Length: 407
Image (tube, rainbow, N blue to C red; front, side, top):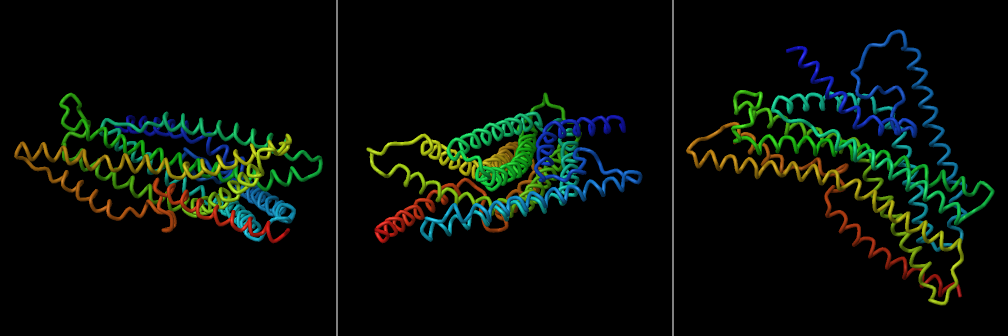
């Protein structure tokens, strides 16, 4: 029995490692994950290497501080030249964007040191959940999560490489202007996107766990399936506890990434306003305008930037939406099972307890709000679109008044 438990734990460790290892390793490169974090391995007492780990942590803190200083310096050097000829509304939006970008980087670097206890506790809970699901003849689809995270990393590499190349062609300058622009915009967005990837991966794992719970419930009355939990009431109780722990796990994930999510939504809203206004300015000068190569590349870069910040919103909302859909599927499945029991003239207290838990938690849904401010569902997209339409019209009116007043 002990050998079987150890084998299950080893199997779960291997699957978690394959699904998260690349993502956490890339995060360590950009200062998002502590260098001395040993993800996917239990904490072990270290006496001989204690001084060495202290050195690694000090070096990691210095590295994060250098990133913060570099981005802050690039902000100061690049901001004045970027907004010198713009009217006050545009200058305010650019200033807001730069402030939020630096806040995101500062938050990410500070949270780097908190990644050790967070991922250690998350790992422990995933092992426990995986074992409970294994006892119910179910498993977490870690390979699916691994495939998605690998594709996201490849997409990030391709996008930021293309964006940097287009930016170079649009504003070729042998001086440090391009370097400052890259440090100010490319590096913080890489950090932001990788942090959101971690959030998305954890939400996808939660969705996979919910899917496994639903699959066990779906075959509850299948006599060919023989769960290892002998008593059916015990099976339902195990699934109920697993479902409750998944809700708590979702709340912890949203709680940790909540400030990052709020700052990202605000930053994307500001940038989308600016970039849509830039598209309006670039394309609203008449059909007889002759486009230069540099202006064409700037327009392409603007469109790429719009796509990036739109993708950030989807990256925040869609994984949580998938987890919520799987969570809400449990209720109808339980209702169907309870209806069969009622039709047979029987009752099941475990099912009623599970159904009561779902009804109680469905009314709260605190885990669907980031910092209690932003509701993380797809309706946020319509709200952002409505806000963008309103503020873009305001910017166009301000620009018309500013242009007429300067003549």
